[in-house]
Image 1 (cartoon, rainbow, N blue to C red):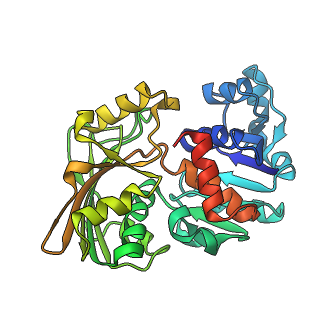
Image 2 (tube, rainbow, N blue to C red; image 1 turned 90 degrees about the vertical axis):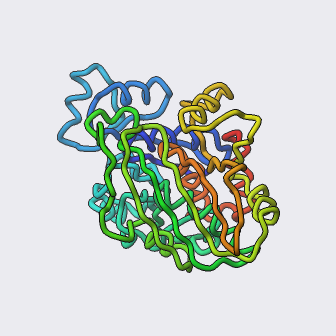
Length: 332
């Protein structure tokens, strides 16, 4: 049983904690929050020991009527692995604290890749990360790209990759994010950071560009990949990937909003889509170039990767066993 702490109980952290709680080989020994908001109250109601992420703010929890078990240092004393789900940049500041407590650490894609020993993606390099002291689960978009590119390279070989990422302006609860009535090249320079991020895991010739749009539900990728594979071979390969799901013509789904509605109707917690959602009709191969569209749920697609990363660091399962177990417990 691996004792797992989650530092940061927000969009990603609360999802990771819930996923850890579903595993038979790991348990949540605590979650940490910086302030006593509704998420902190929900953590206690869910039975997670709650800790103050900032020691000086511990009294604020008592004043709000929320019981805590101590501060983040006390939480780390109970943990073998910590999942850092704090805002971008904070994880790097926390790294020395994890070292001091001799706790293995999992960081998120908002951190620079040098925050950890390796970047991590379950499909592409699980084995390379077994027994590591720290890994960085790559971002939601990079995770989505690797889930398609790695199996295509493995089965068929690929050449140049070009990806245009249409990115949500903010998560549904991020009322301070934007744009509101605009489309932003993000960044205006080429490439966006996603291509170099892919290369921290996989050796591939890739160029990415990005746009931010006034939406909150998901990202959409337009992929162009040089390959010798036929359309049928591409589909067969992707159908063999458990974390790639085809949006079928008979689903009648033409938008990310409809994907979200479909997940809610299927009973997914929070309407999460853990898999890449690839429109089957978009998959085409012309003159040695593959084209496809996929939707990536930025709030949840890295959750199963974090669970697999726990097992990789702890050395408790190989890739196939971990992915299978994670998928079964989540319902993928």
